[in-house]
Image (cartoon, rainbow, N blue to C red; front, top):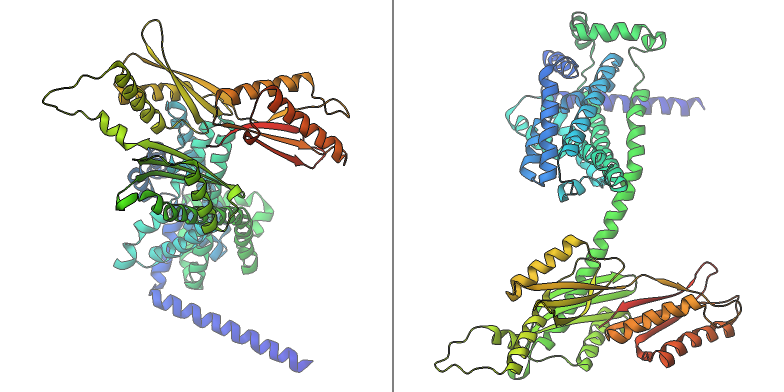
Length: 588
């Protein structure tokens, strides 16, 4: 037993000696003298002051620059705010206080960081409140979802920032601007202010924006403090000679004397003025570091899922483009079509493909079905889970729109002029994209009594298109068709899930549900591109009644309202809390 204890003791001695040798080599590598350590201690202590007017001006001005840069989505302006970086000094002094166990310096640094952060947030909030535009720019959104990668960046940046502060040589000093940009302490605080200023207009978005910015700032704060503490410990900045000279400076510094007098009013704090326990100091910084890692890990997992989804989407797009090549080639080596736009939307097992092509010869339904089959085979998916929306723009019609100079102009008949006009209109409308989530179904053209050409756009969406969106679409149509006296009207077909109900223990629909089905059937009759999905819930394991209800719905739609069975997608779902529903959807 004694032999085992002796071996353990020798092992601990070896670890202690290794740690001391490592610290000595690290301090020697940085070539930091005792006088430089004292100077560094004093400089960082002074950076945690509350009396420096220039420091507070830097806080306010950098917050203003960062806020305006975020709102303008200007990376250059935001980088300018980063370079000021007034918070770097107090945060490094926080790490120094933990490395040296200086409680007074810890209070000074904490008070400085808290008040400076509060001032920056409040100034940013005031700016946002007075500015007329409050859009979430990409530069703002990019700072609302920090993850573990941001934590690692902050750890590295805090380490090099501490080293750059300790050793004043050319190579390290030139890295300080890069450290300030990498850490970016001020922009996250301004994102918090932006979120608070947004709460009055959109509380949910404002709170989530403020919370994301606060998490990023805390990540940088804790990580820099931790790495600064480690660097200063390795530097052996708390040697007896350094302490002696620093204490001599403290006895003449008015701000330090103020904090010492304030702490003396609390006997417990007075006794703990020098935190000697290294384990306690390490725990004080490791605990918040671990707590912050929890939400950062979740954000990292979400980022990983997004990247995986993006990669899967890219694979689908590559397969679609590869399988489309044979369809783009016509007979005798001629080009039949050109793929202008490709969009892929993946929803679970379902893949929705949108292709917009310029073609010389239209594609038949059989060709479309074969293309879907080939894509499904390439992706090893079920063709039933792939839907295709193919928008064809005839290039031959487009060529007819170009002015042709003839020696002897041939006048067009009224029918020819009308056909050319309709082709031009069709091309313009098919290229027009409605604001998401609206999907165009079809359109109609009419001439009002005041001789204004009116286009009615029928679209599928859970909500109406905003007035601003309608105005933009009208302006775009007038520009494309060169028709100043043109108007647009919009007819929305709801794509929301509608609930239907049956009479108790009966396949007969309630009257209100019959009215809903009648309205849906009218929409299907008016717009051939629409389909209807009907989902019936199982009734207490009564399969017969469930089937009767499904047949009753089909009978109403097919027999009474003359809806083709091919345009119906039916299914039976299990679950006590699930209602019987139907939904109109678009599938070309």
